Length: 263
Image (tube, rainbow, N blue to C red; front, side):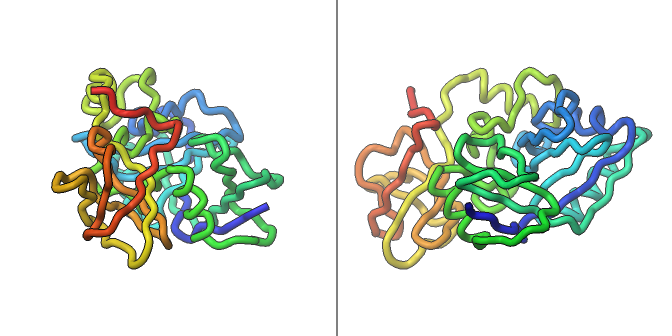
């Protein structure tokens, strides 16, 4: 069993009788139907439909707990407080810690809804950790799961490009949410050309933003790196052939759960 504390994540609590209705109208995920103890994945988008903050939404009795990037916690809590208007809702940033586990499910941990085999999550775990946060990120990157705060250019990536449509991060039947028009239009078109995919390399790590080339054609952009693994926003129609970054060969892997380009 591997258990790690995620110092890169923090918690916001939403309380009050209007909490579910409040969040439901903002996020990509259906919050009104979430059951007590359940965990769902979603995001707050910009009005233009790009990723602003990814989050896990926990239902805890009459409260909703948001597991969010630590760097975004305070600004997000302030933004949500502005959105609540006259609704009976209290928004507060907390010091609760976020934990993940993989291989086995410890008591008190809930299944991560993004991908089977990814692992489990908990808030406020009191036991011992057996792995580092980097171990966790290496595990999820090997499965091809992007972490928006780490693997996407901020305010530039659409949630479908970050595979939110494939990892239970968007409910296309829930009705309105911020950025819905652009997100729904991309879904209706059916053909997605760009997606974040994992890659491996040898030697020195490439810089974030470095081009992935297929011959002389731009095929993608490096968005995240850890050890000898990375994530890149790739053009699915330019995957065939040798891919390079800074003149060095890289191996980009399209996981089975990510559809191939069909143009």
